[in-house]
Length: 132
Image (tube, rainbow, N blue to C red):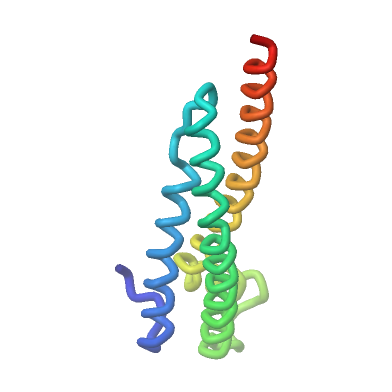
């Protein structure tokens, strides 16, 4: 994995968080047959169990992004650049960490949308069973 932090403890925290994020992402992006009630219930259970991982990853990525931003701002030469240039340089310097922070938030939103879709599908399947 790419070296993002100079501090080894922060780097290892970043790497562990990326690994946890991948576990979360795999469960959220898993395909499910919305016509099969048992698979819907199983996937809802899986989503519920990994939601805490997603939220923890988001908090950790946010912390690491802010920590890295602060470190990069402190090392930036303040005399040579304008505010826009500084913003661009910092955005470039924190790119990997910021990417995971943003993508984790999007996957959390996707998990909420998917949970609602699964609830609706389960409700529809229940109605279909009652009509038979």
